[in-house]
Length: 115
Image 1 (cartoon, one colour):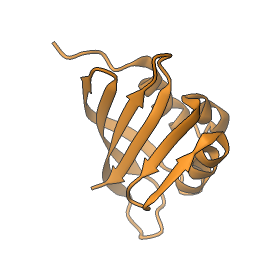
Image 2 (image 1 turned 180 degrees about the horizontal axis):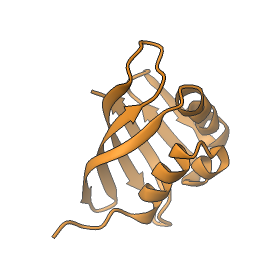
Image 3 (image 1 turned 90 degrees about the vertical axis):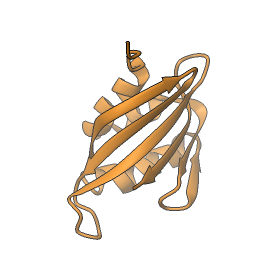
């Protein structure tokens, strides 16, 4: 039987697709980190995470849909499809997230990349 997706991951997708900047940042612990491999940069803390969200989600009108996921201990790996208005003209891009959850259940680190 497949484990249920943690609520914080569902919430992350919901607030992301709603372009809710504060809701997005609240999914992370205070000193959370996004390691965005596709741009070769880490975003640390609330302000950098909000800037990342504005640049890559709000400005590009990016929506995210989960295709599949795996859970092992506090790590959730998710295969996704991003749709939006991207600089390279793509209307859909495959990607993945690897969420590391803190003991409080919030996102401690998110590794993200495009395929």
